Length: 433
Image (cartoon, rainbow, N blue to C red):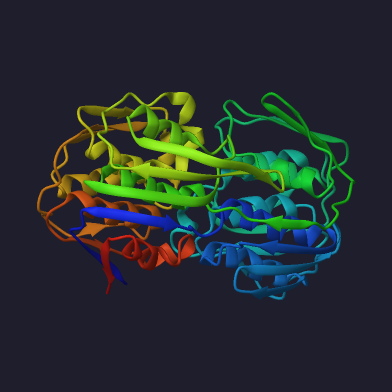
């Protein structure tokens, strides 16, 4: 088990290019594999999660070539997948297992989806339920992986109201809908990331979006295209927070995905008073990109608006570090979803903040954080093998006068393989041991 030792650092500068968006990288493999023709992807995230998806589709007979972050997918068409010879191991990737369940529920072969220790604890009932309603047959370990999906089922379109705002569940149902008889519609209670809908349209599949309702009709086809993956806003969030809290900072993050369903972290940091501006906004392949400049900021505590919660769900560990450095109290509610991520991110972050002397109160669906000063750590921080926890506490070193040790940082490779290298190039002092 590896760990970070993040030594004190107080300045941050430079123009940084963060790796490709994880959500879009996953979907480019899935939909490119199901398309007719050759899809070329640039900027693909070379993290373990996205590579788990890539290997799974190779195991189902799709020829995929990769040179660094350039990927060529020889699509097999919507009905061209082959039975894998063994269970598909999706590692730590919740996105892979939930989205692929929708695709695999409609195939004519049986398959099994497995994952690592962390993934094996994550709830899958939220996708099993709507897929079963569509006619899928799925066995699980009491609602958790491994998932055994029985082939040869004829799926029918449904209209599904998401009980919780979740892009993964929405995407799973829509992907199953590609194969279902009739129309499949998903209604969401609050906006979530819409990369699936955008990419389906980019590959020539008609998706009707009417406010919070997305519909498509099964039986169509996908046509290969070129996909440029922008920088991941979730990974960029660590440097946004780092620059905002550092005593001296001027950082520009280039080519970041600013899809409006993902910019909650930008809105939250701006509400807290972050010195953050967007420039060079452009659209590439249906996705919005911008350069983001962040300078040292005097942050203040806020009540985080609940409508921003689904738009920043993956970025909250980093936001909690910003809240720790803000003047006054920051309150988050309506974020129960954080408890079923790679770890219980509310409790695990609270435990780490306690070690750094930051007062906080854990709520059932959120947390209250009292801004203060990071103290000498009373213990090693346990990340519980959650990549976002590991990187968030590394960022805290910009406002701590003592080294911070973080255990279990191996899964940083899932989303941000060059995090330490990029952070150190901008002025931080992180060693992985």
